[in-house]
Length: 280
Ligand code: NAP
Image 1 (cartoon, rainbow, N blue to C red):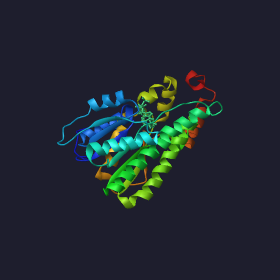
Image 2 (image 1 turned 60 degrees about the horizontal axis):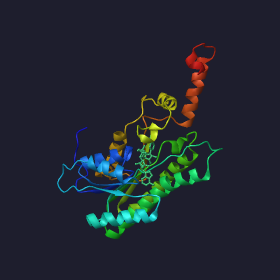
Image 3 (image 1 turned 135 degrees about the vertical axis):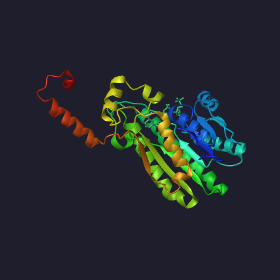
Image 4 (image 1 turned 90 degrees about the vertical axis):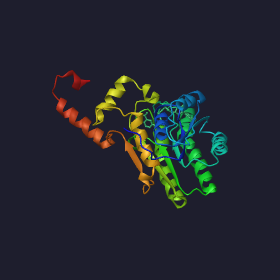
Protein backbone atom coordinates (compact mmCIF):
# COMPACT_ATOMS: atom_id res chain seq x y z
CA UNK A 1 0.00 0.00 0.00
CA UNK A 2 1.32 3.47 -0.87
CA UNK A 3 2.23 5.52 2.19
CA UNK A 4 0.10 8.55 2.94
CA UNK A 5 0.51 11.32 5.49
CA UNK A 6 -2.26 10.77 7.99
CA UNK A 7 -0.04 11.13 11.07
CA UNK A 8 2.10 14.12 10.15
CA UNK A 9 3.29 16.12 13.20
CA UNK A 10 1.89 13.52 15.62
CA UNK A 11 3.94 11.91 18.38
CA UNK A 12 3.28 8.22 19.09
CA UNK A 13 4.51 5.78 21.71
CA UNK A 14 4.28 2.05 20.98
CA UNK A 15 4.98 -0.50 23.71
CA UNK A 16 6.21 -3.88 22.49
CA UNK A 17 7.62 -1.91 19.57
CA UNK A 18 10.67 -4.15 19.35
CA UNK A 19 8.90 -7.09 17.71
CA UNK A 20 5.97 -8.45 15.72
CA UNK A 21 2.82 -6.33 15.71
CA UNK A 22 4.38 -3.46 17.72
CA UNK A 23 7.27 -3.19 15.24
CA UNK A 24 4.88 -3.16 12.27
CA UNK A 25 2.85 -0.40 13.99
CA UNK A 26 6.01 1.70 14.52
CA UNK A 27 6.98 1.28 10.87
CA UNK A 28 3.51 2.16 9.59
CA UNK A 29 3.17 5.20 11.87
CA UNK A 30 6.58 6.46 10.75
CA UNK A 31 5.68 6.02 7.09
CA UNK A 32 2.54 8.10 7.77
CA UNK A 33 4.61 10.97 9.16
CA UNK A 34 4.51 10.42 12.94
CA UNK A 35 7.49 10.72 15.24
CA UNK A 36 7.65 7.35 16.98
CA UNK A 37 8.89 6.32 20.43
CA UNK A 38 9.70 2.62 20.23
CA UNK A 39 9.29 1.26 23.77
CA UNK A 40 10.20 -2.31 24.61
CA UNK A 41 11.55 -4.37 27.49
CA UNK A 42 14.46 -5.24 25.23
CA UNK A 43 16.50 -2.15 24.35
CA UNK A 44 18.26 -4.12 21.63
CA UNK A 45 14.99 -5.02 19.85
CA UNK A 46 13.71 -1.46 20.27
CA UNK A 47 16.90 -0.17 18.63
CA UNK A 48 16.52 -2.64 15.78
CA UNK A 49 13.01 -1.28 15.11
CA UNK A 50 14.32 2.27 15.42
CA UNK A 51 16.88 1.54 12.70
CA UNK A 52 14.09 0.41 10.36
CA UNK A 53 11.92 3.54 10.62
CA UNK A 54 11.54 5.98 7.74
CA UNK A 55 12.19 9.71 8.09
CA UNK A 56 10.56 10.85 4.88
CA UNK A 57 8.51 13.64 6.46
CA UNK A 58 9.90 16.93 7.72
CA UNK A 59 10.49 17.21 11.48
CA UNK A 60 10.24 13.48 12.19
CA UNK A 61 12.38 12.35 15.10
CA UNK A 62 12.17 8.80 16.45
CA UNK A 63 13.65 7.34 19.61
CA UNK A 64 13.96 3.93 21.32
CA UNK A 65 13.45 3.52 25.06
CA UNK A 66 13.68 0.45 27.30
CA UNK A 67 10.59 0.04 29.47
CA UNK A 68 8.96 -2.66 31.55
CA UNK A 69 5.26 -1.89 31.18
CA UNK A 70 4.41 -3.92 34.28
CA UNK A 71 6.34 -1.45 36.47
CA UNK A 72 4.78 1.92 37.34
CA UNK A 73 8.22 3.39 37.97
CA UNK A 74 9.48 2.29 34.57
CA UNK A 75 6.40 3.63 32.76
CA UNK A 76 6.64 6.97 34.57
CA UNK A 77 10.32 7.25 33.58
CA UNK A 78 9.32 6.55 29.97
CA UNK A 79 6.85 9.44 30.02
CA UNK A 80 9.42 11.74 31.62
CA UNK A 81 12.00 10.87 28.95
CA UNK A 82 9.50 11.47 26.16
CA UNK A 83 8.46 14.84 27.53
CA UNK A 84 12.08 15.93 28.05
CA UNK A 85 12.87 14.99 24.46
CA UNK A 86 9.78 16.35 22.66
CA UNK A 87 8.42 18.91 25.18
CA UNK A 88 4.99 17.27 24.90
CA UNK A 89 3.33 13.94 25.71
CA UNK A 90 2.47 11.49 22.93
CA UNK A 91 -1.01 12.01 21.50
CA UNK A 92 -1.04 8.46 20.15
CA UNK A 93 -0.39 5.46 22.40
CA UNK A 94 -0.40 1.81 21.36
CA UNK A 95 -0.07 -0.87 24.06
CA UNK A 96 1.27 -3.83 22.09
CA UNK A 97 3.59 -5.31 24.73
CA UNK A 98 2.40 -8.77 25.62
CA UNK A 99 3.49 -12.22 26.69
CA UNK A 100 2.11 -15.74 26.92
CA UNK A 101 2.83 -18.41 29.57
CA UNK A 102 0.60 -21.24 28.39
CA UNK A 103 -0.54 -24.15 30.53
CA UNK A 104 -3.76 -26.04 31.14
CA UNK A 105 -5.85 -24.60 33.96
CA UNK A 106 -5.38 -27.71 36.06
CA UNK A 107 -1.60 -27.32 35.95
CA UNK A 108 -1.07 -23.55 35.79
CA UNK A 109 1.25 -22.07 38.42
CA UNK A 110 0.02 -18.95 40.20
CA UNK A 111 3.19 -17.11 39.09
CA UNK A 112 2.44 -17.75 35.42
CA UNK A 113 -1.08 -16.43 35.89
CA UNK A 114 0.16 -13.32 37.69
CA UNK A 115 2.96 -12.51 35.24
CA UNK A 116 0.68 -12.57 32.20
CA UNK A 117 -1.87 -10.35 33.94
CA UNK A 118 0.89 -7.98 35.06
CA UNK A 119 2.34 -7.45 31.60
CA UNK A 120 -0.76 -7.67 29.40
CA UNK A 121 -3.43 -6.08 31.58
CA UNK A 122 -1.67 -4.04 34.25
CA UNK A 123 0.91 -2.92 31.67
CA UNK A 124 -1.88 -1.62 29.45
CA UNK A 125 -3.46 0.13 32.44
CA UNK A 126 -0.18 1.78 33.51
CA UNK A 127 0.71 3.08 30.06
CA UNK A 128 -2.85 4.20 29.25
CA UNK A 129 -3.09 6.01 32.58
CA UNK A 130 0.33 7.67 32.31
CA UNK A 131 -0.27 8.93 28.76
CA UNK A 132 -3.82 10.11 29.56
CA UNK A 133 -2.67 11.97 32.69
CA UNK A 134 0.11 13.68 30.74
CA UNK A 135 -2.26 14.66 27.93
CA UNK A 136 -4.86 16.06 30.33
CA UNK A 137 -2.16 17.97 32.28
CA UNK A 138 -0.71 19.43 29.08
CA UNK A 139 -4.09 20.65 27.85
CA UNK A 140 -3.71 18.80 24.54
CA UNK A 141 -7.33 17.97 23.83
CA UNK A 142 -6.73 15.31 21.24
CA UNK A 143 -5.49 11.79 21.75
CA UNK A 144 -5.90 8.26 20.48
CA UNK A 145 -5.22 5.35 22.80
CA UNK A 146 -5.10 1.97 21.11
CA UNK A 147 -4.93 -1.22 23.12
CA UNK A 148 -4.20 -4.68 21.81
CA UNK A 149 -6.55 -7.36 23.04
CA UNK A 150 -7.06 -10.66 21.28
CA UNK A 151 -9.90 -12.59 19.71
CA UNK A 152 -9.21 -15.34 22.26
CA UNK A 153 -10.24 -12.91 25.01
CA UNK A 154 -13.73 -13.31 23.53
CA UNK A 155 -13.83 -16.94 22.49
CA UNK A 156 -11.33 -18.57 24.89
CA UNK A 157 -8.40 -20.79 23.96
CA UNK A 158 -7.24 -24.05 25.50
CA UNK A 159 -4.08 -23.60 27.58
CA UNK A 160 -4.50 -19.83 27.91
CA UNK A 161 -6.73 -19.06 30.90
CA UNK A 162 -4.24 -16.40 32.01
CA UNK A 163 -3.80 -14.86 28.56
CA UNK A 164 -7.53 -14.90 27.68
CA UNK A 165 -8.41 -13.33 31.04
CA UNK A 166 -5.81 -10.60 30.49
CA UNK A 167 -7.11 -9.82 27.00
CA UNK A 168 -10.77 -9.79 28.07
CA UNK A 169 -9.65 -7.35 30.77
CA UNK A 170 -7.94 -5.14 28.20
CA UNK A 171 -11.21 -4.82 26.27
CA UNK A 172 -13.15 -3.84 29.42
CA UNK A 173 -10.45 -1.38 30.42
CA UNK A 174 -10.56 0.22 26.97
CA UNK A 175 -14.34 0.58 26.86
CA UNK A 176 -14.33 2.21 30.30
CA UNK A 177 -11.38 4.49 29.56
CA UNK A 178 -13.23 5.61 26.41
CA UNK A 179 -16.20 6.74 28.52
CA UNK A 180 -14.05 8.51 31.10
CA UNK A 181 -11.69 10.23 28.65
CA UNK A 182 -13.95 11.32 25.81
CA UNK A 183 -14.59 14.61 27.64
CA UNK A 184 -10.86 15.32 27.31
CA UNK A 185 -10.81 14.62 23.57
CA UNK A 186 -9.08 11.27 24.06
CA UNK A 187 -10.45 8.30 22.13
CA UNK A 188 -9.75 4.72 23.25
CA UNK A 189 -10.18 1.70 21.05
CA UNK A 190 -9.05 -1.90 21.10
CA UNK A 191 -7.82 -4.10 18.25
CA UNK A 192 -8.43 -7.82 18.54
CA UNK A 193 -5.97 -9.71 16.37
CA UNK A 194 -6.64 -13.31 15.47
CA UNK A 195 -3.63 -15.48 14.74
CA UNK A 196 -0.86 -13.31 13.37
CA UNK A 197 2.58 -14.42 12.18
CA UNK A 198 5.00 -13.07 14.82
CA UNK A 199 7.63 -14.46 17.23
CA UNK A 200 4.74 -15.02 19.70
CA UNK A 201 2.99 -17.49 17.39
CA UNK A 202 6.29 -19.02 16.16
CA UNK A 203 6.14 -21.00 19.43
CA UNK A 204 2.79 -22.62 18.51
CA UNK A 205 3.19 -26.16 17.10
CA UNK A 206 2.61 -26.50 13.34
CA UNK A 207 -0.24 -28.96 13.94
CA UNK A 208 -2.12 -26.39 16.03
CA UNK A 209 -1.50 -23.65 13.45
CA UNK A 210 -2.97 -25.85 10.67
CA UNK A 211 -6.02 -26.55 12.81
CA UNK A 212 -6.49 -22.84 13.50
CA UNK A 213 -6.10 -21.75 9.88
CA UNK A 214 -8.57 -24.43 8.82
CA UNK A 215 -11.16 -22.65 11.02
CA UNK A 216 -10.49 -19.21 9.50
CA UNK A 217 -12.60 -18.59 6.39
CA UNK A 218 -9.74 -16.58 4.86
CA UNK A 219 -7.63 -19.72 5.25
CA UNK A 220 -4.43 -18.13 6.54
CA UNK A 221 -2.80 -16.37 9.47
CA UNK A 222 -2.70 -12.59 9.45
CA UNK A 223 0.36 -10.41 8.96
CA UNK A 224 1.54 -7.80 11.51
CA UNK A 225 1.14 -5.12 8.82
CA UNK A 226 -2.57 -5.95 8.59
CA UNK A 227 -3.00 -5.16 12.30
CA UNK A 228 -0.81 -2.06 11.91
CA UNK A 229 -3.10 -0.74 9.17
CA UNK A 230 -6.09 -0.86 11.55
CA UNK A 231 -4.05 0.84 14.30
CA UNK A 232 -3.15 3.59 11.83
CA UNK A 233 -6.82 4.14 11.02
CA UNK A 234 -7.63 4.33 14.75
CA UNK A 235 -4.72 6.71 15.38
CA UNK A 236 -5.72 9.03 12.55
CA UNK A 237 -8.53 11.56 12.17
CA UNK A 238 -10.28 9.15 9.84
CA UNK A 239 -11.66 7.49 12.98
CA UNK A 240 -12.44 10.76 14.80
CA UNK A 241 -16.01 9.71 15.72
CA UNK A 242 -15.03 6.21 16.88
CA UNK A 243 -14.34 5.43 20.52
CA UNK A 244 -14.89 2.54 22.90
CA UNK A 245 -14.98 -0.11 20.19
CA UNK A 246 -13.06 -3.31 19.52
CA UNK A 247 -12.09 -4.14 15.97
CA UNK A 248 -11.42 -7.76 15.10
CA UNK A 249 -8.53 -8.37 12.69
CA UNK A 250 -8.92 -12.10 12.31
CA UNK A 251 -9.96 -13.16 8.80
CA UNK A 252 -13.30 -13.82 10.61
CA UNK A 253 -12.35 -16.08 13.47
CA UNK A 254 -15.34 -18.29 14.29
CA UNK A 255 -17.22 -17.88 17.57
CA UNK A 256 -17.39 -20.80 20.01
CA UNK A 257 -20.83 -21.84 18.72
CA UNK A 258 -19.70 -21.61 15.08
CA UNK A 259 -16.66 -23.77 15.86
CA UNK A 260 -18.90 -26.32 17.53
CA UNK A 261 -21.31 -26.30 14.55
CA UNK A 262 -18.38 -26.90 12.17
CA UNK A 263 -17.17 -29.80 14.29
CA UNK A 264 -20.68 -31.30 14.34
CA UNK A 265 -21.07 -31.02 10.56
CA UNK A 266 -17.58 -32.53 10.00
CA UNK A 267 -18.59 -35.32 12.33
CA UNK A 268 -21.85 -36.07 10.50
CA UNK A 269 -20.10 -35.92 7.08
CA UNK A 270 -17.47 -38.34 8.36
CA UNK A 271 -19.85 -40.84 9.95
CA UNK A 272 -19.36 -44.19 8.25
CA UNK A 273 -16.46 -42.87 6.15
CA UNK A 274 -13.15 -44.73 5.96
CA UNK A 275 -11.34 -41.50 4.99
CA UNK A 276 -8.39 -41.20 7.39
CA UNK A 277 -8.63 -37.38 7.32
CA UNK A 278 -12.04 -37.68 9.00
CA UNK A 279 -10.87 -40.03 11.69
CA UNK A 280 -7.81 -37.90 12.65
P1 NAP B 1 5.89 -10.40 20.11
O1 NAP B 1 6.48 -10.45 18.74
O2 NAP B 1 6.37 -11.35 21.14
O3 NAP B 1 6.02 -8.89 20.64
C1 NAP B 1 5.73 -8.52 21.95
C2 NAP B 1 6.79 -7.54 22.39
O4 NAP B 1 6.47 -7.10 23.72
C3 NAP B 1 8.20 -8.16 22.45
O5 NAP B 1 9.15 -7.30 21.89
C4 NAP B 1 8.41 -8.32 23.95
O6 NAP B 1 9.77 -8.32 24.32
C5 NAP B 1 7.69 -7.10 24.48
N1 NAP B 1 7.44 -7.20 25.90
C6 NAP B 1 7.22 -8.31 26.65
N2 NAP B 1 7.09 -8.00 27.94
C7 NAP B 1 7.23 -6.65 28.03
C8 NAP B 1 7.22 -5.74 29.12
N3 NAP B 1 7.03 -6.14 30.39
N4 NAP B 1 7.40 -4.43 28.85
C9 NAP B 1 7.61 -4.00 27.58
N5 NAP B 1 7.65 -4.82 26.52
C10 NAP B 1 7.46 -6.13 26.74
O7 NAP B 1 4.32 -10.63 20.04
P2 NAP B 1 3.21 -10.08 19.03
O8 NAP B 1 2.56 -11.25 18.45
O9 NAP B 1 3.73 -9.01 18.17
O10 NAP B 1 2.20 -9.47 20.09
C11 NAP B 1 1.92 -8.08 20.20
C12 NAP B 1 0.61 -7.92 20.94
O11 NAP B 1 -0.43 -8.51 20.16
C13 NAP B 1 0.58 -8.64 22.29
O12 NAP B 1 -0.15 -7.88 23.21
C14 NAP B 1 -0.15 -9.92 21.97
O13 NAP B 1 -0.77 -10.46 23.11
C15 NAP B 1 -1.15 -9.44 20.95
N6 NAP B 1 -1.69 -10.47 20.09
C16 NAP B 1 -0.90 -11.20 19.28
C17 NAP B 1 -1.48 -12.17 18.47
C18 NAP B 1 -0.68 -13.02 17.53
O14 NAP B 1 -1.25 -13.95 16.94
N7 NAP B 1 0.60 -12.78 17.33
C19 NAP B 1 -2.86 -12.38 18.52
C20 NAP B 1 -3.64 -11.62 19.36
C21 NAP B 1 -3.05 -10.65 20.14
P3 NAP B 1 10.52 -9.76 24.47
O15 NAP B 1 10.39 -10.44 23.13
O16 NAP B 1 11.92 -9.36 24.80
O17 NAP B 1 9.78 -10.48 25.55
